Image (cartoon, rainbow, N blue to C red; front, side, top):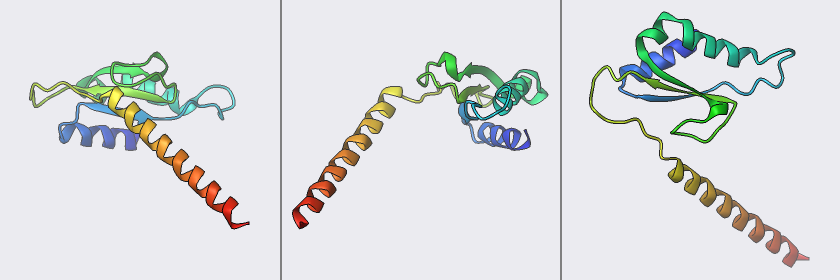
Amino acid sequence: MEKLTIGLDNASYYGETLVRIIHGQGKHSEFFPVIKSMVRHWLEESDFAREKVETVFRGEDGSPYTAPNPGETIVVLKNLLKSGTEPGMDFNDQEEEREKRRNSKKIRADRLRTSRRRRF
């Protein structure tokens, strides 16, 4: 939990208001997702979280900032600087970028396949 504390403290210090914690789904744990449970318990119970965390969104429930993903937890930090800005990760922009990358990979793969066929 030390790295989590340091990471959230740094994010708070630099004025970040939205943090995505990627802990994984915990499918390889024997009985239950250990890391995921520890992270969420720490976010509910720790003094640091009480002081600096405004809201926690469980990944499987989704959030206003991301699509549902059980392998992550979204944390909205208290804006101690009070700059008046809303946290924002534009989900539509992320989806568009992801789609562009997928399409460019398909185009490259098709070109590579056709160039290999021409050699023989």
